[in-house]
Length: 412
Image 1 (tube, rainbow, N blue to C red):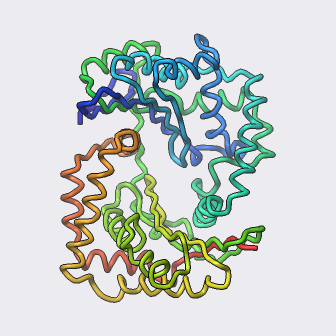
Image 2 (cartoon, rainbow, N blue to C red):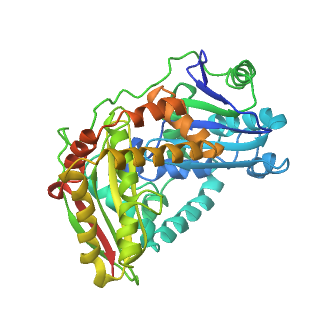
Image 3 (cartoon, helix red, strand yellow):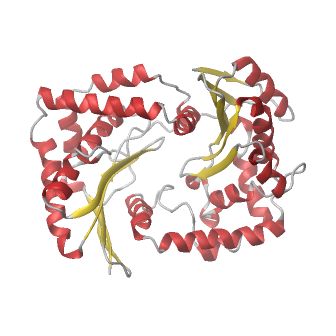
């Protein structure tokens, strides 16, 4: 991988891949956690509105410019960033870069489009609220980070979103949509000199600036002054299944323990059908269709949880089985053979993930945005290989302790 910094502070990261398809885009360090209390949901709304017109392009031209040559244009908002990206044949790289740069840095947020798009977002909010298997994740995280800037959901509340206008969108994007607060990422058969020249020309109207690199280096919030009180809450709404999430706060991007938690989560409830909880809850007992674990790493903290959906009468049994497998990691170190097998599996999954170029390119850009670091697959393998059974056990005793575990259930 290669990196560069433009005089206006924009950082560029490139991975060379021998392919006729190029993936590229902008990562902007402005997400849900950057919103003020009176603008919850504005980051996500701005993501929608960024496609609605610039000084040079109207919304229809934006929608068609890449589509008409077989390309794709998309975006999403997270707690820490907003990402705009494209997939395009190599010969249309300049077209994609011009379009992306224009919408990210020169959108005008026309009032008439905001009136329409607010309702689109409100429909998205209501659709999300109607799906408890998705809603539970935001609700779980919001409770886990109560009174913290991570403790509100990405979409916002419909009543508040309906109040936003042109001035709100301009105020938020003026704060964060700037080259020095962004990264341009590329994955494809492209030379860095070409990309630097192209993006320099496209962003030449911005003044010189130093890049903004997040300096929140607190390793985790379990040791931070912000209090955390484990909770056990139930949300009642009409649903056939019970949806359950159990978890805890985890580790941030600058904490090496995040790799240990990554491995532990993969053992317990990763995508493999041989994960402990899939074997226990589904294969041996037939209690669930879906069970999986997930972790999120933010700049200063993180979270980990296991989710499953089951018949309401089976909740206690499922929780007992989850607790049993968590205690297996706490009570004694994995033996040498089991640890080696777990490492082989996760390294294989990492390698397969590298072949999903769009996901890899976006992940590369986001990681570079927040840490100013880029890691090869070989470096990741070294980190995995360095994890010891005692480190795994120690981490499990911290994160998987019953005393600090939170639980959220959505059921009728």
